[in-house]
Length: 136
Image (cartoon, rainbow, N blue to C red):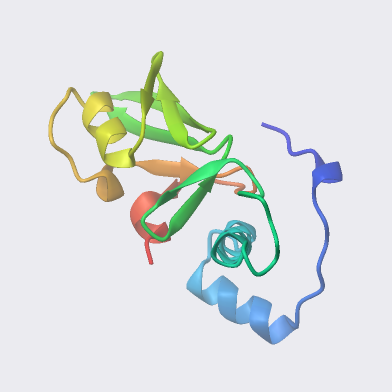
């Protein structure tokens, strides 16, 4: 999937900060920064006089999954992939309101630990990331 660079803004950050973040998040920090900013906007929308969420997406505990985030799991050697749309997840024609529900459905309607089973690729991520590595 190609990324449209016209939808991004470059923000200068001190090198020590970027270096520290890269040590903690070696798979890339753009998704982390995006999550922090979205959480800030969500938590301060009244003070900032925002009418609603600034972007579509959903929260999975402290993790924000923006709209168009891809979620996948491998089950019996086959990848199954879903997409975050609005405030829910769409997979195989069904809508799920939680990653736990999605993981269970994708893995044969068996109870699973979604943090261990799912991989995430947010619009700003270059690679798939294990959900557990994004958990705070």
